Image 1 (tube, one colour):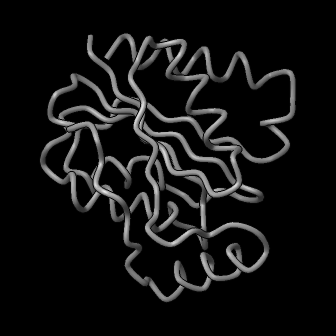
Image 2 (tube, rainbow, N blue to C red):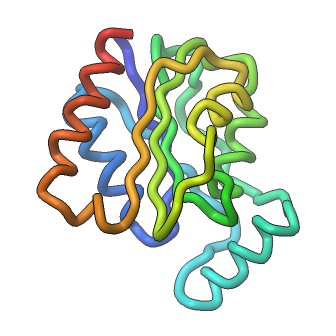
Image 3 (cartoon, one colour):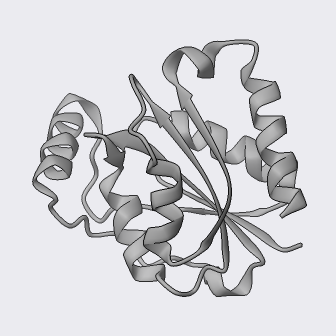
Length: 157
């Protein structure tokens, strides 16, 4: 199985989880990068404001093509109850090229319902598994077993 882990991370938390998943899957990695950085407090404020207003995020062209992989794992933080804007831009651009998608999200608070399956649907892909982690779960001892269950589900797909 050829797998690709694609993620966007503003603070680095989603990146850590994405790299851990990629290592356990033996997958290649594609990090979504924005043309305009969203770092620091002002970047956080600007990213949330853009997400709420549904401003399109300009991203750098991906180096890897999703169509070349059996499964694509998509990861993003939650902004304003939705996946981060740069991930939504990636999904719109990759629409129809991803056959199977597993999705993970990270958040500082409550999760939005159905966000995991909606990510796969936005890309036009079959949803094969999901993982949602909030800031408390990411720091708990149980995060390892949650990632293990997610990776096992992806491998079975």
